[in-house]
Length: 115
Image (cartoon, rainbow, N blue to C red; front, side, top):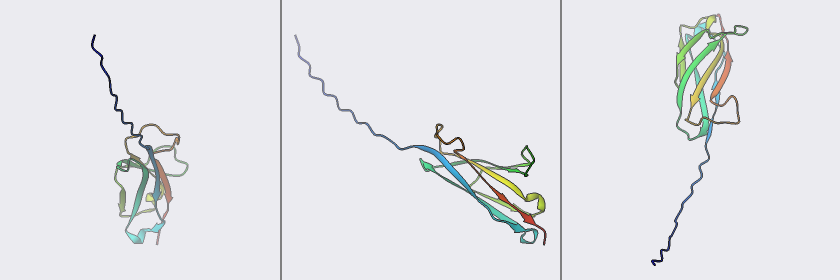
């Protein structure tokens, strides 16, 4: 008979992970400005983000007016009143589950007025 003594060394590391909360920084401007920038700010764990897409919607209009490539900053040039509207940014950090149904999505309204 052989006696065997098992040593268990288990290390458990817990990570605080959460899908990002996203806010969009935007401001009103005029067509004379020529361009404007919007910024997508994501905050979550882990802190590495993929910016998926930007979408523009007009108030009272149910569908997407324009779609732009995902990035932290969106710069619009050749401004007209048609650039007014809600801009939504989508960002991900790879965390799929969240208690916040709007996690990963933020939006803001901006208005472009004539001179």
